[in-house]
Length: 209
Image 1: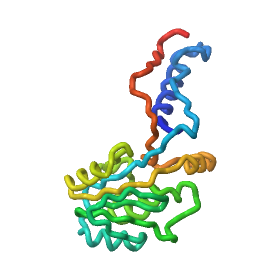
Image 2: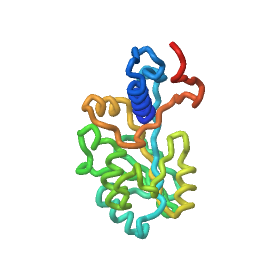
Image 3: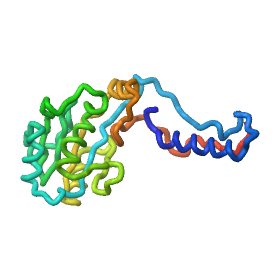
Image 4: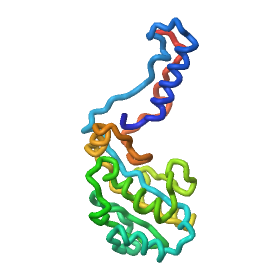
């Protein structure tokens, strides 16, 4: 599953619940099915899923730079927005300045999940520097799909006096490697295109086959 994990899990729960209420089910009822769409891997585009942190965790920009510099090579780009050009490269917007971050070798990994750029950012920056341990639940972090550019990241970070991170997109081979290892992708690590319009097709669970 490239996208829609939660919807698929919800559909399974609904189907199992309906089966409990209808012990004579045949397996042909509509609640046994849910809508899906298949795309060839070479026709999918994976875009970056960027991050916005809404505060500096009580630290100064100088302290943030010092701590980040322990794990990354940090290069100031001044006002020029950073769109990462390769794996291991991350753009950071902080206090009106864009920085290009390149992961030092000792924090990279060949392990499918730990080696993802989003995992490196989480494990080496968001958690230890900004104190964001659970990005799925922490209200201090916001995610921005790749269709929104760096101007959006800058504006959001400026508005909340925080920081923003532009990511290099996860590629399809990294996604397959995680799936083949029977691991789970980190939250908000891929933004897939194309996406179907919501409500374009509707599956009525109480309908008849």
